[in-house]
Length: 184
Image (cartoon, rainbow, N blue to C red):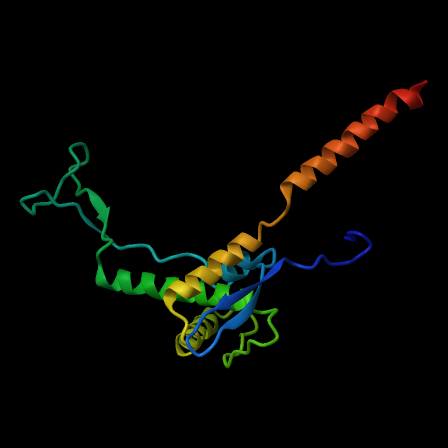
């Protein structure tokens, strides 16, 4: 596909300054490429963990039975400690992988962890865990990492819709104006 005679369109990017007492740091975030989520899905890191199921209990701590089937009603156990740990791990990995991809185009940012080749889920999980540790050791807070990812979401959708609509309407109305003249 050629656009404007070029093979590729440059992705949106934006400088972001992180303020520190010792001096500001400017990072360049570049929007995520098309298919980024599918890449995460292919290595098993796109879906959050599901909470375990448990029987639904009455106020008196007895199991609630379905009146038709006489079987226990089931509910998700969102307070299960193992589930909460897995959810936190998933969230940290997801943020770190996303932030890494957003920073891929910044020549001043270098990571120690090497991105795995292929789709080995364990290798990608270990890579994500390494990124989490690198972001922690760099001094970024969880909130700052979240903000970087939010900015990444914003720059992914910076199409100027007004100019697109105006351009379309202008060229559309121009064609309409020319149509009767060429029919005569």
